[in-house]
Amino acid sequence: MIDAALVIGAARDRRALEPELIWSWVHAIVEGQVPDYQIAAWLMAVALNGLDDESVFTLTRAMAEIGTEPLTLRGLVDKHSTGGVGDKTTLILAPIVSSLGIPIVKMSGRGLGHTGGTLDKLESIPGFRIHLNQEDLSRQLDAMGLAVVAQSSTLAPADGILYALRDVTETVDSLPLIASSIMSKKIAAGSPNLVLDVKVGSGALMKNANRARQLADMMVRIGGYHHIRTTAVLSSMEQPLGRAVGNALEVNEAYACLCGRGPDDLREEVLVLAQEMVALAREVSADQSRALAEQALDSGAAREQFLRWIDAQGGDAKAVEYGLPVAARTPVLSRAEGRVGAIDTAAVGRAAQLLGAGRKTKEDRVNPRVGLEWEARLGDTVHPGDVLAWLYADQAEAAEAVEHIIQGAVTIGAEDVVPPFPTEIRRMHD
Ligand code: URA
Image 1: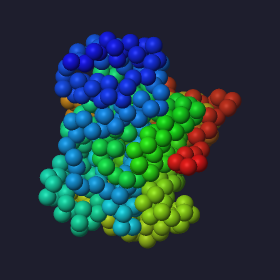
Image 2: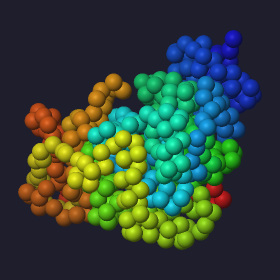
Image 3: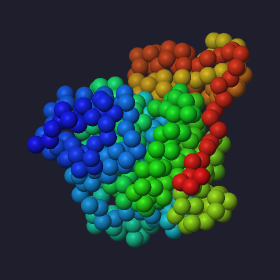
């Protein structure tokens, strides 16, 4: 039986534990031998005191392996985002990279809180299947080198247990806990190359660049220790990415981007992430991989791959080509005159959630048709009556509450403009 008090005391007193004891601790958690109050005490001690690198490496490995059913199918490169508002990059990136002959098997999650999840976006496409059996997955990979599926409950189960407790004990915001959570799932997924999109700003878990860099570097070190070639891209979440926030709206915007009509910030971020994924998988320079990614996007090869992929997973590709149906829209108008100085992007995400695009608890169902289209970009000059955002709502009461949130989320007329964080790349050997 594990001595939980010893483990908690070590975290409280900043004493490193023997690796064997960390493995036993994670075992005991997965096997249900540790009561929640002791796990919660340990989480709080780690959140307050941090963990040394060696302990984080061991904890991450133990979380990745204990209770995980070994996977037989894996891609050559994987990607993970720390979570954002309007982040639909996977829908564009995965077809770009796989159209270049680089296989991708991506396990994705659902949205929770103010951030969206790739699975919810994909499920807004009629017929799209997020669960594939091994045979179908293998056939799809052979045929087109791309599949995006729901993360199985046997992938790093320790993370599921710890995350649920972190969510209710104010211990989500801890660098070693975030890094081990993300990296345990990525190690368990088994791809040898990994690109992390670490979001920075008002809509992200990391509100400032220094903490985002610390998190990025910690995850890159964990990757390196476990022989996964890892690159982190820091990217802005000071405003929604692109314009669309909400599931069908985001799929429509992603498809527009694949057709060469997407917003510039979305296209640029996708190309930076694609460049880093291709550079790792193909072992070519960033310039060469950028050219390959641009060519895949601009030639229409990625668009064709996207439609084949949707079709292969049972989705109605024609419906995407025509544009997925969305709710009726109403504008939120500016009441002030001046420059857009700052955007509370988490509030924008919460507004979309309130409209039904996101969920408050895991059990909630999302409404694919609702969300918002963001117009007011940082630095824009707006006049009274200009559109700040379009609301796509199915319920008038929700729209009223959301209008209020949007008005409060935009700072107009401030002296200074909070600039979007410029993309920054943290590679393993930099
Ligand atoms: N995403 C994760 O998967 N885990 C965290 O702890 C935070 C973001």
